[in-house]
Amino acid sequence: MSASIEEFLGELADCPYLQRLARVDGTVRLDLTEDGQIHHWHITITSGKITLSRENRPADCVLHGDKALLDAAARGERNLTTAWLTRNLVLEGRVELFRLLERLFPGPPAARNPRDLVLPPPGGQS
Image (cartoon, rainbow, N blue to C red; front, side, top):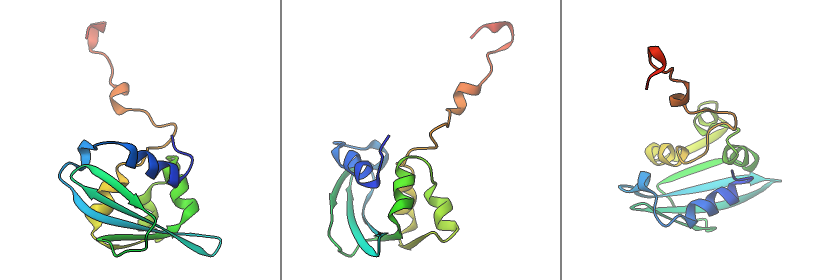
């Protein structure tokens, strides 16, 4: 699991192809505030491939938030949708790009797959 948003984005960019984004084309910019400074990440999604830059360019979707919040999300400790709904994260532009990007973030560290909770059929046979 990533320790920071930088590591998380780097891992995404290192993936040669993300099936979840196969039919997605668009750009997202993260404007992250830390110690009074704004750090920019520009994410380009082209049919399953992600490329990154640190440029402050226009994007289809722009997220404004605290870097600590995104670091916590990269560790699975915060949910970006909850942050958006509670106005800890400001979103401009295409909401569907935000939702697609948010689904790439890890779940909570102690989360379990619901399929693991399915009880075996009566009689103990699978």
